Each structure stands twice: as structure tokens, then as C-alpha cells.
Amino acid sequence: MFTKKITLVLFVFVALFIFNGTLFAQEKAFPKKGEGITLFLKRHNRVGKEYHDEFVKLNKTKLGNGNSLKMGVKYQLPPLKGAAATVARKPNYEPLFGKEMAEYKVTSSELKGCCFYLVSGHGGPDPGAIGKMGNVELHEDEYAYDVMLRLARNLLMRGAKVHIIIQDAKDGIRNDKFLKNSKRETCMGDPIPFNQFRRLEQRCDKINSLFKKDKEVYKRAIFMHIDSRSKSHQTDVFFYYQDKNSESKHLSKTMKSTFEHKYNRHQPGRGFTGTVGQRGLYVLRKTTPPSVFVELGNIQNSFDQKRFILSDNRQALANWLCEGFITDYKRYRKKLK
Figure 1: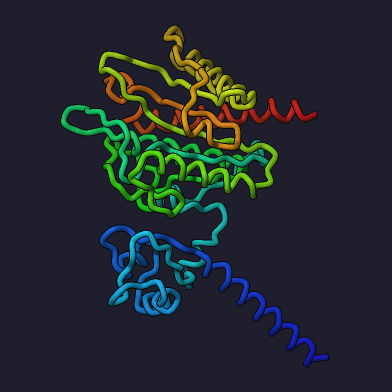
Figure 2 (figure 1 turned 30 degrees about the vertical axis):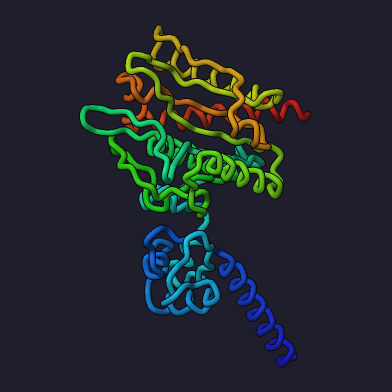
């Protein structure tokens, strides 16, 4: 009997060890231009000779001369160990939000059963539209990304499943007025291509691949951008929906109604001139889940710029978008009854 118990315990231990080893060994990533093994591993929180040696063993057939990294090759990462592994598996913890905001608390189940695909516009080699405030450049991709992270955190806190499609491992949620531009962004770990068509295709393919696997009943995608028009052209937030997709249209209209209500409450008498319309954008045509494409304003207009550079305003945008999703999900549930 005692021997059987030992055998059973050993079997379970070995099974768990193999399972965990397999799980973490599957993590892969592409190197960035100019990276060697040390910098590549450091970017993925793996520092030290042990990680270096294990990486070489795992990828010996893929490495170049002198164990150099090849661009366009996806390398297998060694499993995280110790405290780093604990953090990686920690529940209610998203490192992309930054150290101060990474931990979050699920405060409600309003969006339980929902899955969201969040895409901030441009990124990587493409900063998107560039505005100016004094001598400081305002890059579309940085401000759209910050609002998107705040929205992701809000959705998670309400019980939703969230896929952050465009990612920057370093930025996190920032409260600065002027957000520094970088080219670090990836499409869930994959380098963002220089070619515009390939960039758009990449993010659509990623969403559609995840969509096929996700089992949630309510699945929605959002694409977040900041428009660029003449400096004198002040605009409110506006929304585009997919052609011949009633759920996408419902969602866009719900978002607009939410923003109208918020403006009437917080700035009575101002009015809200944001619009809803159908537009044949590539990402709307090629994305499977019902989607909304959001333009947060005109990055060239001094009035609109205040909507992006103040962190409280970026948070308000995220809060209102989250409320729009909650309202639309409630409508969807009633429809199913």
C-alpha cells in the first residue's frame, strides 16, 4: 500500500513536471534588428547564463554563425524559473499594464462570457498620424495604445476575456502628457511588417485565428485610431461599422449613444457631434467578429489634443468605451432570451 502511494505521488509529480515543461517551452518570439541572444532574452525577462545556455540548446539548429540570431526566425524561449515564473502565472495580473497597474481586481461579472480583441492603430515601424503641440510631436500609435490598455484593464475588471493584439512590453499605462514614441510594438510577439497591407493582414489574421478558438458567446473587436485633418477642424469621437453586419452596426450606435449621454452629463450644453457610419476599411472587411473602428479625434487640432494628452481624459475615453460594451452586451443577452 505504501509503495503504491509513493508510485502514485511520483507519477503525479512527473506528469505535472512534464506538463509544465511543455507548457512553458511553447513560448516563442522573433528577435528585433540588432539583438543578440543576451538582449533578446533580457527583453523577455530571462537574464543570466543558465537561460543563455538553455536557449542555445533549444535553438541550435536555427542559430547563425557564432550563435547569432536570424531575422524572421521564431525562437523558442526557455521556461521562466523561480519568481519570474510565479509572476507569469499570477492571476489578475497583466504585465503589459506596467508595474503600478499590472495587478487588477475583478470587481463585477458584468462581462463574464465576453471576449474582446483590442487593436490600437499602427505601431512598430509605423507611428501613424503625427501632430504637434509646441515643439513636441504627438504620435497617434502611442496615445491610441494608452487608451487601449486602459480599456483592456476596465474590461478585465468586469470579468471579460481580453486579447491585446498590439503590444509594447515596456510602455505600460502612462500618465504623462507627452508619450515618447518607440518602435517596440509587436503583434502579440510577432514583428509588425513595414508593408501597410501586411500590417493590416497580420492583425486581422491574428484576431480571426483567436476567434476560432474562443468559446465565449459575445465576441467583439475594436480598432482604435486618432484621425489627422486640418488644424482648424475640431472633431468629436466617431465610429465606423462593418458593411452588412447588424451586430457591428448596433455596437457602433451604442458607443455613440454612450458618448452623447456622457457629454450631456459632464458638459451640458456643449452637444456631441460624433458620427456613426459604414466604411469599407480593410480591417473591418477582413475581421470575423463584429467590430467597431473608433477615431478618437483630430491629432492636429489643439482642442482635440487635450482629449489625448491629459491622462484623465484618456481614462475617461476608456471608461466610456467600456460602458458602451456593457450596454451592448446587455442588449445582446436580451436578444438571446
